[in-house]
Image (cartoon, rainbow, N blue to C red):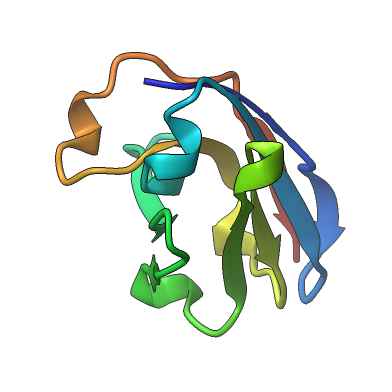
Length: 118
């Protein structure tokens, strides 16, 4: 697993934008698929998007066309550009490695809070 630090969250109005960053430590970052996840109050953590080491991206349907995931392997950093934000995007956002068994990952960062006001 990688150690991560998420940042960039904040309070924005509906329709606004934020750019989240995920700084990772560990030599496996550049070769690992990485993902963004979020957990809204009272809900389970959900996967939002992932990016392979080569830059292939996949998004959950609810954020397609609004969010863009990217990575800079030289900087061990991953990003999530979020545009056209909606109140339902309000959550704590986390980053971590991505695999089909991500639900079993035991080590998570502190996350970054995103709040979208209506």
